[in-house]
Amino acid sequence: MESDQAPPAGTIQVNFVGNYSITWEPPVEPQPSGSQISELQSEMFDPQSTVSDSEFPSTNAELKRQFIAYIQDRISGVNGDSDSDAHFCDPNIDRGCWLKNYHSLLAIVHDPTSALVATDITRLRFYMKAQNVEFLEDAFNQLCIEYGLAIDKLGKLWNEKNKRDATYAEGGSGDVDDAGQSNEAESSGPAKRRKIATATSSRSKADQDAQNIVPGWYNKMCVLTGGTFPLEAAHIIDVRVTKKLKADGDAIEIWDMLRNFWSVERLKSLIFAGNEKCNILPLRIEVHKLWDGHRFALRPLEHPTDSAHRLYLQVVWLKDITTDGNLVHSPWDHQKGTITDFRRGSNNSHVFPALQHGDVYELVTANEATHPLPSMHFLRLRYAVQKLLAGMLASRALKDIFRGPPPSAKGPVRDEVHMPGDWDMLIRSAQEEGVLSVEAAKRWRRYVLEDAYQDYRVWAKQDAEWRAERKILDRGKEVEDRGSGS
Image (cartoon, rainbow, N blue to C red; front, side, top):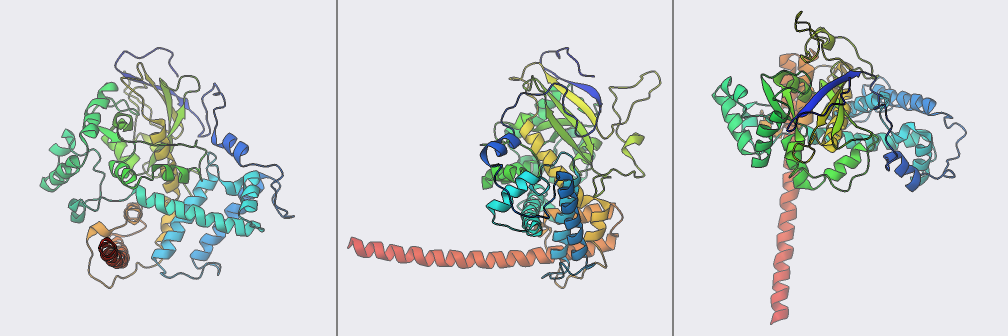
């Protein structure tokens, strides 16, 4: 239950609240503060902005059913079960990209917390009028393209490898966020230690300090299990992602992409530098691995009256999610004690409850200035992306994506640095789920590497041509300037 008692100074206290539906909200409703829906209603919605269509659904539920049917039809088409999508430049890569995007979108539609234009009558009518779209199927098609582009970009960004880190070419593909921690370093061989040293040196001092300091705020205990060893200071937003967003200056663009799927507020800035301590959650190593492997997500919820000192995290199981949004059981079901909460249960009988889908925890800080809570924006960004990835990692989706015999690559094995991160994630997950054998996974990896390498060569050629043209123009301008000066 939620505790009214303040934590000791210098600590962040974690309390178990209960197990609830993923539509659960804190009991005291917050005052309206310009949410996304109210913004859209005030800035965009016009009751008179309607599209004349006698067959337009009369309820959101019916609209949602029609959109689900449309996506399922597209999936059938990509699989060759119908003729609606029988036109792909590459029967493997392009087909797989469409399928991962469609399956991801299908899971999002079924999620009761999503906020899609395609499933809201008022917003869809406005969209159709603004885009000059007359028919519902055309609107669905256009929205699917927009959703697919966003899903593809977010998936690549979140799973992108550091191409400048040569250690990835040695076959390592794990999370190196928390490299350098003593328990991992001591149990690793020379190759692993080289990877750790490289990853640690690539991180800022502020980030390394945050990893050393923040676990102490939680009494060096895992936020979810209360366990103390082996403990890792897990990043909410991966260091590679923060670097990518900082380099490209597109953090807000990414956030706005997520607003296509979820009801999140509009932001003017999203800054990582200087907020390193708000980007850390202490987790036991096995919990951290499952979190980074998209087996579960943490749904963040603001406290309605004291957001500076309190926030909620809800466990949302993703590993066994089906494409229709339901949970199924697996041999290592999360209710059988894979992850247990040592804060609850009986010490006498040594019986501790397992974490379950829907469990809610409250984080409370005594001093938000010296011991701030994790950033709600970072938590929302991660939760949104992980829910987005859950659909494409579902067993049925993986079976569709890797349907049929694995393709054959004609060229030599390319350097691992060219491996797209989203495909790396999909192939590893398919192998773990038994969808791909070891040999089939190798063949798929080689095929994707070759395709990515060819794309890189095209880009490199275009870049070289652009630079050559720019050099000629600059040289001509220099000659012209010298002539005008004389």
